[in-house]
Image (cartoon, rainbow, N blue to C red; front, side, top):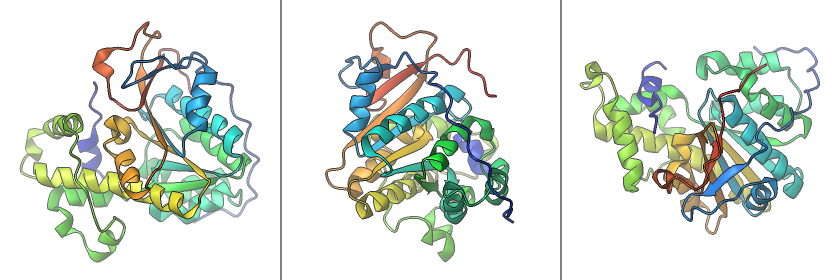
Amino acid sequence: MRIPPVVMLLLFPALASAAPKKPAPPPPADTSAYCIYGAQSGKSFHGEAAFKSIIWKSDVIYIGEEHVRAKDQLAQLEALKALKIARGNKIAVGFEMLDATFQPILDSYAAGNITEEAFLSGTGWNETWGVDFAIYKPLFDFVVLNKLKALALNIPRKIVSKAARTGLEGLDPEERRLIPEKITLPKHKKYLDYLKSAFGAQPSAMSSVFTWDNYLISMSAWNESMGARVADFVNANPGWAVLVLAGNGRVMYNAGVPASVKSRVPGVRQASFYTEDSPRCPPVFPKDRRDLANYVWFIDHSTQTVK
C-alpha cells in the first residue's frame, strides 16, 4: 500500500461580483465496471444496481480518493448521482479539500452567488489544496446545479502542523476552538500501523521536530474535526444524507473519520469505499485488501485524463 506524503503536508503549510456562469452538466460515468467487493466478506457488489443498493440505504457515505487520480473523483460523482435519486435535495457533500473557515465562501458558491473564479480566489485553492481544480469541478458543478448543501470539513493545515510539533497544548485559544474539545485516539491496530509507517517515512532531519505522540494526536485531531463537522450536520438534519469526499487515509479501516462520526451519531448507517488502482477487475477479492473499508472499489486509472 502506497503511503501518501502526509508528513510533508504538515511541514509546508476578495470575492468577484460578476454574475456566475451556469455550471456544465456532469460528464458521463467513467466507472461503468463498478468493480466493488465487500472488504469484510469478499462478496462482489459489481454493477450499478448493486452499487446503488449500498448508497440508497446509507446515511453517510465515504468515497476515498488519491487526490490526483481523476477517476476517483468520477467515482465520487457516481455516488452523488445515486444519492440524488434516493434523497432528492436532502444531501450535503462534505469536502476535505476545504477547511471550515471557508464555509461562508463555499455557501456562496454552492448557492450560485459567486463565480468559480471568486471561489478559487477566496479559498486560495491552489495554495491551500494545490490539486488541479479541474479534477473536482464536475463534483462542484453538480452541487451548484442541483442546489445541494456543501460542507467544508477540514481544519487549517497550520493547526495540524503545529499540533504535530507541540501537541494540542501548543495551540492558542483560537486554534483550539476549531477542533473538538474531546479527541479520541485510534485503537485499530492496522490503522495505527499505517500511521506509524507514515511517521517513519519522514526525513531523518525531522526526527527532532516530530514525536510519535504529537504526530498521533495531530492526525487524530484532524480526523476528529472532520468527523465532528459531519456528525453535527447529521444530528441537526434528520432524513438527510452526507457524501464525504476525502483521502483514502481518512477512510481506511473505518478508523479515522467514520469512527469519529459513529461515536457522535448513535445508530448512523455508514458505507465507506476505499478506491484502489487496478488495471482490471480482480476475479476474486484480494485477501491483502481485507478490512480496508466497508467496500473496496477497483478502478483502472491507466487511461485517466483531465480536460
